[in-house]
Length: 136
Image (tube, rainbow, N blue to C red; front, top):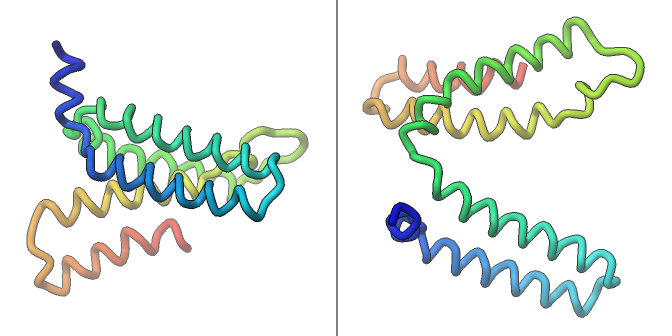
């Protein structure tokens, strides 16, 4: 029963539009690219669809609560890699901190802007500071 309830929470229009755009892109790639590149892109499209469906099972209040801690942890890791540096065959420089930070920034800014009006300059400056800290 719980899965049936979650299936009602999936944004079917978003899923259908994503599948349509992915299908159109793969069709156009089929005409121009070699088969290896096409299979590579098709696997990413399928992974994106699966990710979209799996993410719909995550309760949104958990995502909202995890926004600031995720931002802080990724920022700490970015500072450690920048400040301490890693030598040798370490795995840490290979992790996509910047890509993960983009998702963390989206979550933090969504939570920040959902908590109040954006009409005063102090709130806009705070939002710019949230974005500027990892960019620096």
